[in-house]
Figure 1: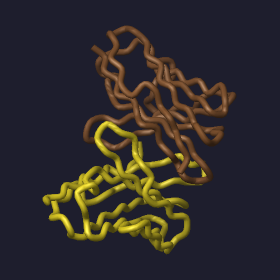
Figure 2: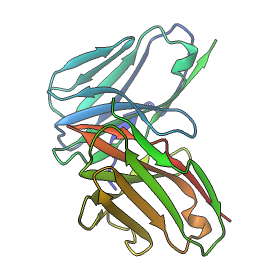
Figure 3: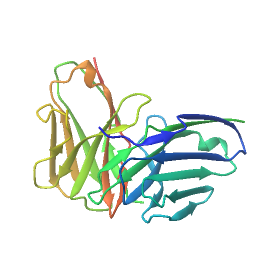
Length: 110
Length: 113
């Protein structure tokens, strides 16, 4: 099935550093969603984006819906140990059917 | 956010048997729910769209006779893996949507021995 191109695939950072990850697609979406998944759990919604160019924050998280509707980024500022996990982007059309990126595995060294 | 409850969280079954997984929307009604499959260290792949009161829509390559989906009410969808084989071992996750935001269940780890 179709997948989004998400990068980087993995990140190893020091606690306190900022993190940036992004997703690109050859298709246009009308919704971009960012999720975090902990081992053995389902994904948890972090941020939802609905308009091209929209910039939305949720605490230390900031995400943007690209102007072309084909990309999105997620930034995490001042990382803490509980930020460890796998982050997925997902694009959706009106039918709410999601297409996921491959995931970014975040590891934080204390 | 909305709450989706999935049960069981883990199940081990013998090869050839069937396993049923339940997905419930606890605080909203879901006319549509989605079933995903996730292999280790991989992303989620959509298996099928579950439609309340009608037949599910399966993605290409997903066997509808093997993965039976029933969506009999606005708050419950079930996925039954029939005649399970070891290659069906995976993490299965359901989701329901409120407006355009999808909320996921906790997932079910299926191991077929």
